[in-house]
Length: 77
Image 1 (cartoon, rainbow, N blue to C red):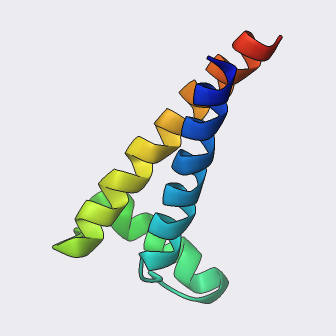
Image 2 (tube, one colour):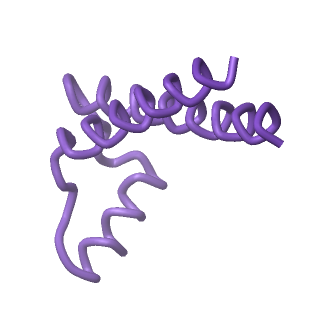
């Protein structure tokens, strides 16, 4: 059971790294961070196509990462 949990956590971690690296950058610099956050908040620019799929997959792998991390710690502890 320990080996399975660690293996799943490792695979999920690699998948999450790949998904983050495949995503395109939204904006650059401090002004881009401020205006990009405002655009997301007010919905002026919606993610379309492959960016939306990558974003959703990243969220899923992020949640799965935390679940698997807690599960692994529970099993090993």
